[in-house]
Length: 86
Image (cartoon, rainbow, N blue to C red; front, side):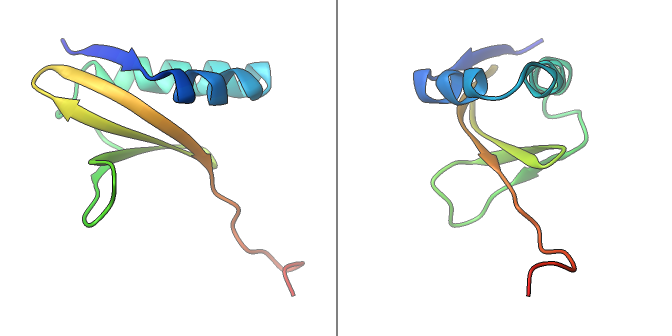
């Protein structure tokens, strides 16, 4: 079982979100990153400042993993294009 560390920036980003989204992200992080690397939804990033990302709905949780500890660095919202984009 891995430990999970939230950087202050990531924790502030999490607190700015609405409660249901906070709970969804927190539960996914806790459920998947404690079992990392034997989990789904995590992708290793190439040529990026951070090592991995976890997809949670329309949010991406960026983190680094150092020998049994996942260090969550940032949470980013992904805005996808739809029929109203143009």
